[in-house]
Image 1 (tube, rainbow, N blue to C red):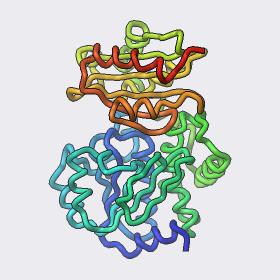
Image 2: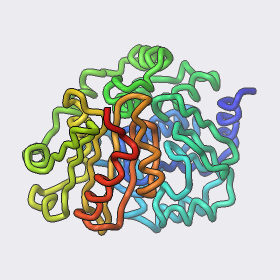
Image 3: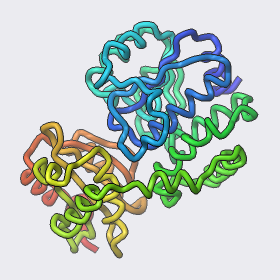
Length: 334
């Protein structure tokens, strides 16, 4: 029995299944959660998705009403955890990734936990762990669960649509080096179910608001700082600047990749002042330019070699200065 068959057996044996994912939802955490939910339902079982916070607005074309939010309905989420006899931990490798409120519930829960994830250095709290760090997305691993548990025939458009979205977003539209031949094999299987991939791209990319575009334009024209000697660029945005452009969650998500499109750029760092802290996004190109070490060692973060996150409790100016001081250590001159 392979691990995916073991997971399927645990699903069949459970009565109250909870699906969790990390704080600051993205396409992969939403996509893998919904894909797993619909697969569990096709097995004749039921489950509840419990996430720490809301998805960005550009993902609302998915049925996010199926997701209970800790930040909105803590009583319902707490009740779900208390009744759970099986908890899925999707797209995160440590209990603190679900935020402090949900972390307490997760660590107090005595039921079996199953981790399905692709991030480095997973903690050892789950009963079963699928940790494939070379795989591009957790959504790809959910397809592996469906296929390798012997239920490939259950993969349909309802399951496939959110999983395609998860793979699409976590690979930067299939441009990152984490994309494997197997990724395209899985995409072919998803498309064969009738998933309308062109509509997913449209819904994901063609839904900009005027304020979002104006914020991005301001960030690129007024806040972009390029450290030419190191081929690294930084954008910093204060809470006042975000408020001026009616910031909504997800409005700055594409800025780092936009910076990386500048010829010769090795790395991009974008940080925004939210909830009293600086939330930092690190992106880079190539195995020779990892950003996860910088995020881990200095900004209480981590992630993939070329895509990581972090945070700072310093001011905007102090955080910017700290980054500028550290960059020469991690990105030496040519």
